[in-house]
Length: 392
Ligand code: CMC
Image: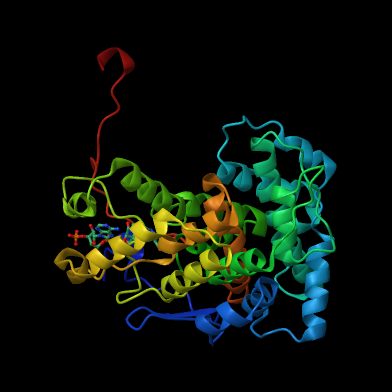
């Protein structure tokens, strides 16, 4: 009795049983509810994938239609909520806006503060959240860009509607090309869930205190923001761009990444679980080529990225530590091709991850889990006298 095992970063701690997403890190396998990511990436729509993740099975036609109708119905946001956007300074990072606004949404829908985890009320709330996150993200961009907001158009697809809210102008309705709609759909499907990663664990930890779904996912957004997690997708593009601008050889960056006295890391490389390859990165690398070819885009950053991947594959430091490109390595190049601005990349990840966060929050409650409350080993003074102010 009484011994404590430390596991920094929870690399070897199982926090829950889950039947949502299966990851086999040694073999690069990722499956949502048992279905391989490779199949979903090519065959499934994002709303179809969200349904699969939330309810454990692919929807039939009627189920998908009523799910999509619900998402469509909840796309507009309350006018008073709209006014909040103008309170943010122009320089506000969209991730800060997203997190704050997700919490705010619950104030406009007090019924969601005590949402049950099953039944019609849960279904309604899940659809509401999947829909509002998209509207909030687009409005945050429009406000920061000093452009008028575009209200959602119920006749458009999930991706089409987002692109319309982002890019339509009063005199110029944005026309969503099938290639771009497909590329965005692929991006969202690949990000829809990834078992107990940092943000999903955060959603579970917050939810375990019985905090409501909205505050739990708002916390998830904050965890995702960091450059070691979702923030890596923007950091990769900044890094590739810096490499291009500097004109320095790639080995200069490789050496810096290997130097333990230098904080620099190759962004988009390495993963806690995948030790041979990240299947999402394999899919993305291939699809990025297809998308750029279809859109007739020649992106220098893709060439630099591929060269960087190539030299790391020959390098002992990266080989011995099993460091390969992860999902964030090629995703930024896809988002660039779609026309998404850099500071919105991690917001895009958050839109994609929403089904996974909601499903994990639900599962946490379905399994009646205990409140998350890790222990520590105390290393400070065990006892110290209180010193009066005039003697300090
Ligand atoms: N560049 C250089 N060295 C690295 C890198 C990297 N990108 N990643 C890991 N290492 C080294 C690390 O220094 C350590 O070396 P040593 O054994 O000599 O001390 C070894 O590899 C193991 O790394 P770790 O930090 O213990 O691994 P972790 O499982 O704690 O961290 C990670 C995983 C993804 C945070 C990390 O690999 C990393 O910082 N990568 C760069 C940021 C990134 O791309 N994040 C996206 C992650 S995937 C999707 C997502 O979650 O958003």
